[in-house]
Image 1 (tube, rainbow, N blue to C red):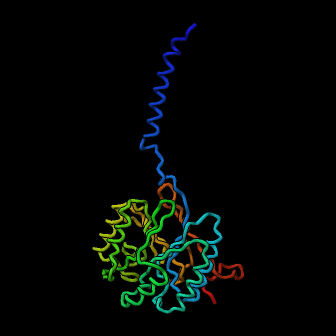
Image 2 (spheres, rainbow, N blue to C red; image 1 turned 135 degrees about the vertical axis):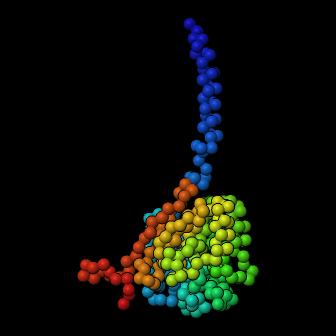
Image 3 (cartoon, one colour; image 1 turned 180 degrees about the vertical axis):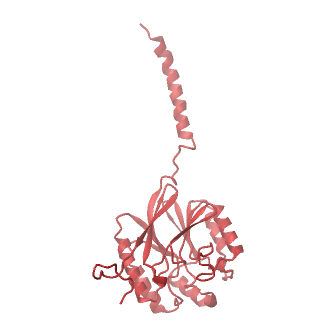
Length: 287
């Protein structure tokens, strides 16, 4: 006997399944973009303040630990104050670079206020660019732009010949690729206002935050405060990392960041520098 119901239902069922399948593939809520499926790791260090023997030793230990991480690290980014008002002393720069060159992955730099000095712009800028690179640069990892930019002229309100950080940053961000922006001094006011760090000029801060929020910036990362902090710049998170250097009794640390599904998370790794003594927590001051 001929099954007329089966003959009629089969093409109808096929059409229904085709329509449903089409809906699944075209739904904007269910589609997985390349940006959402991207996952990788990188490391952030800041404020090595080379010139102090203790700071060299701390940096060496961090590099040793970063090289030993079990995951694939794309790069390390150093967000400034590489040196400590002494970037024109070749011996200090040479020693610091010799340590940093031991990294097994690429390292990218940002100039800090103790690297390029407002009262000696020409000489310190020349030395920074010669040894550490341009004032603004971009690299791409897994489709994500890593943008390093010197923002002290914006925050402190001075002019650096031939360099407009906001204009040059916008040219990079206008591609609208997912981006992470690295700089040195955070734009929010310091918690210990007027006692530790100068605040950004209001006009520069407003332009900075507006620019970041007009493009596809996933996060901003900075140093300078010598503390762990998180802020929001409009809809963009700002991660402030603690230093490598020991000023104000700080413990050496670095941050291991994970970029996953268009978002950024981190783990702070702290370094115990000295030997254990009588079962007590080791001192961080080298003898």
